[in-house]
Length: 268
Ligand SMILES: NC(=O)c1ccc[n+]([C@@H]2O[C@H](COP(=O)([O-])OP(=O)(O)OC[C@H]3O[C@@H](n4cnc5c(N)ncnc54)[C@H](OP(=O)(O)O)[C@@H]3O)[C@@H](O)[C@H]2O)c1
Image (cartoon, rainbow, N blue to C red):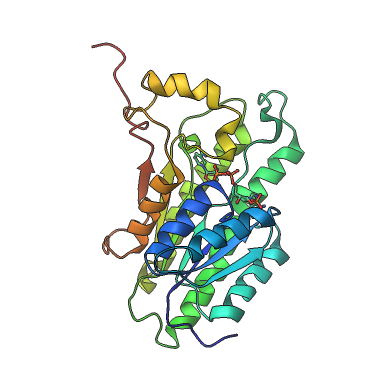
């Protein structure tokens, strides 16, 4: 393990594309060295690194391939970050997959369920466990001095708005909500804050196939703020949460959804 780096370190799962890339960029703008995890798209991860190094104040970066749904990969991922920097201050559990085939729940298959749960729920749980252990170990070395250790989980409006063609995805994101509360409770005494960021409809590869379907809905008021969300919108929320601006808050949900979550009375 390397001696702890002077700069704080953030590990962002699924940092190669979409929302994860937006999070990497905002954390880098806030001075974090960034570990960019990805599953298989190395070219995209390289592009994220290039963008981080092209910032007006470039940060140190590390590209780490690892399937967060795989136990050995998760351990290797954390080991690689510690071997480079000796510390992890922020973990963002962002990597996620949609429901394979988006089958109606009457037709959904167990294989797809297992895949979604492994990446979207089991991965974040056990990665949080491992990273929290490492964060606590750092306390023994008097680090970090700034008390800004945090874990952020990227959920979805699917955590509370059911869609019957992606039950596994919805349940994984609802589970992430409880995961956030469990770890917020467990780590509060140690000064480690845990948050959920709940995006609405965000313009990324994940939503590309549904773009034509969503655009008119957004224009018609699907969210009170009538535009697509961006990866930058989500990145800014994550950066604000981990900045220490909310020192008496943990376990909270921040919606980044243009107001989608507001329930409207159907008749006025
Ligand atoms: N887009 C939306 O509207 C929206 C809304 C609400 C919530 N979300 C959530 O936000 C997160 C990011 O979504 P996105 O739209 O940015 O998705 P995306 O464009 O499909 O990107 C997915 C990212 O996750 C990585 N990834 C996928 N499986 C992985 C695995 N097993 N291990 C490690 N990394 C893995 C991908 O790596 P590779 O590049 O190597 O494939 C990529 O970096 C997800 O958790 C998603 O559920 C998205």
